[in-house]
Image (cartoon, rainbow over all chains, first blue to last red; front, side, top):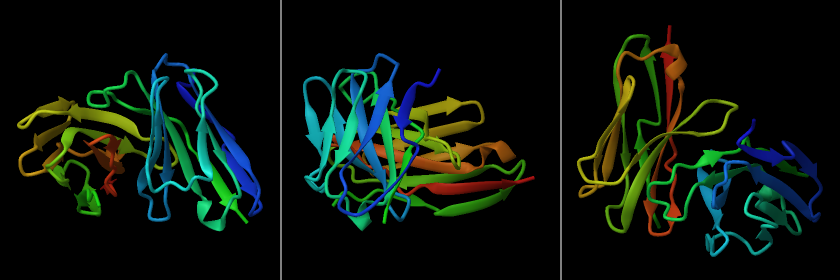
Length: 115
Length: 110
């Protein structure tokens, strides 16, 4: 069974469109994350979220918004897509909220290409 | 700006060689350090979580040490095997966020 899954695996879309990437974890974890792998292959955190707190990386444009229908899901919605949004987006989850000891389990990534 | 550096950027070793690489990070506002192993076309997988100065963790042929006062961690691989080929990422928890380093790409040649 896949622990952290993302859909779609690939997403090709036009500039200006609105799109969502879905993430689901079946680990019973309380905290979920979204990361962007940039053009230099660095992983940059975008959001961390549990049912109590959303922590946003201040560098993330407000066109990006996380939406969590329940504890097992954290979807990433992107408005008005721009060319620079093209990247691989990774979802991850961890058991608790402390962050300190919490190993993160990553999804397979979603490759977004904005034309 | 929270600067996490890893060196070397890439490394080629022969099968059987032992190797090590470095992660350096700001020592202020430090809470923990995670090491991940990231194979091409796969997701990052956790190796170690370290929190205390002087921590040493070991998993098989791979071990890691942590110096929180000077802000660095070493990852060691003993007797490298081709299946160790991957990018090794460190991610210190600085304040509220994990800051991933750029990774060290290891290639082990048979």
